[in-house]
Amino acid sequence: MVTVHTGRELLNGGLLGEPGASYSRLLESCAPTSPGGASQCTGVTVGIAGLGLIGGSLGMALRRAHRHANYDQGNHDSLHVCDVPGHCVAPGRWHVLGHDVAPGVGERALALGAIDEFVPTLGGLAARADILVVAAPTSQVAAVVLEAARYVAPHTVVTDCGSVKAPIIQALSQGLGSDVEFIGGHPMAGAEAQGIDAATPDLFKGARWALSQVPGRPATRLAREKLETLIQAVGAIPVGVEASEHDRAVAFCSHLPYVLAVALALTCCDAGKRTPALELLAARSFWDMTRIARALPEAPLDYCTFNKAYLLQALDGLRGSLDALRNALSGDERDRLCSMASAAREFLITMDYQRCLTPPGS
Image 1 (cartoon, rainbow, N blue to C red):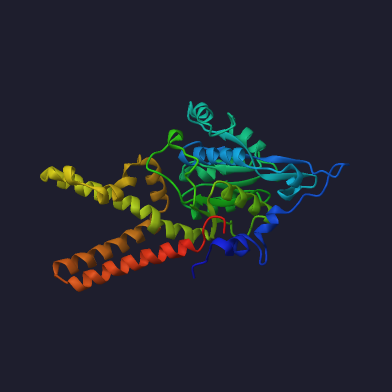
Image 2: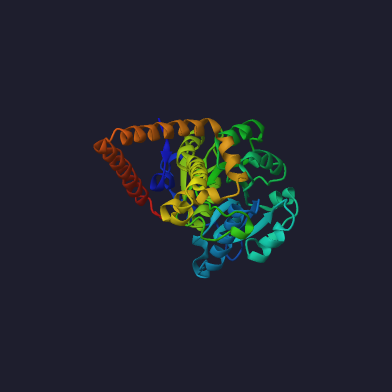
């Protein structure tokens, strides 16, 4: 059975929260820690390992959320998540650290306003972070998390942005210490352009952000709430989903579209050699369907090969649909073609309706 929890169900409990838990507890007050009764509160330090499109966009979005946060000092105590006794973090007050191994990326991230500070080592980044986000290529995520885990503090929440979850979580379930708070993550957002120069603070606006727990070692409530706060701060919606279900779903709705775009572009490339007018007449439907094939192939091929088993199933399903459409067309079965097209339309309309049931901020 598919176990996916979204929207209000997630925020009020579900996969990432114990039964009856309420996301409103994120806003609970800190106990007074000074003689005058005031709480001692600081901002949240977010460390981002990997400053490409995803990591850079996350940093920009958090820094914008920090700038736009409107604090009423008199009511400041209503905006705290207690971390450890005497130390609380205030959602919206984000301090962004960044690390990247590629030469010049850190300096560019600073110039673009994606980070507040560049940290030259992964260990230095991990040691200072309240939340550590690993935005490395999918095939490198597990190794980066395991290395960073050697330096993180006990209160640090570790997450990732890998496009495939089960292999990462399996590797970490065997190699990660039991004292490390890890929650797998995958923002369902992207673009055909890549790298820090393609980063934008609006990338995650309205996007679902998948969260997957490590079986047998669920994260604490505080860790979940910290991460959910970060996700909502950048305009995204946290969605709890089991790792294997995530991987099967994205094989069909994310990875298959990339392969299909490549196939369509290659088919038209070959046809264009015999039909020069193709390049002149290609219009919006063609560009819409091939947009993602414009991406440099390293990243998409990384996640496609990492999710090969489910992607092959998706390709088999696509081939079946194409065969059915071809047979109906060759047999002049207009009613059958109309039925298949109508079924596709109804499916998409239903998807649109379901997504509207869990709008941002619900």
